Amino acid sequence: MNSPDTAVICSAKGCRAAAVWVLAWNNPKLHTPERRKTWLACEEHREHLSNFLDLRGFLKDVVTLEEWEASPHH
Image 1: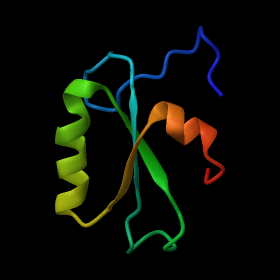
Image 2: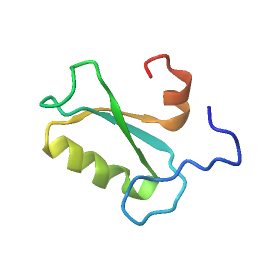
Image 3: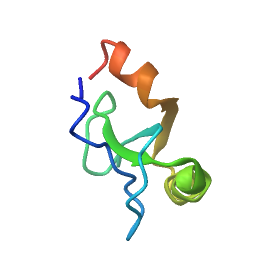
């Protein structure tokens, strides 16, 4: 869990906005199928980052940060 003074920042280059989405992905050439790497996204960059990963066949899941932190898969 994140403490209130530890801001979770969007992964988009140069963005300092608070992240509200978790993009779970993996590169099948590098990671086992169950492995999940994560990028964080603010509302503004969620679609851009999702499209970037999806075009490469890497995107596995997009969930809210709240859902991600509540789930047992990480």
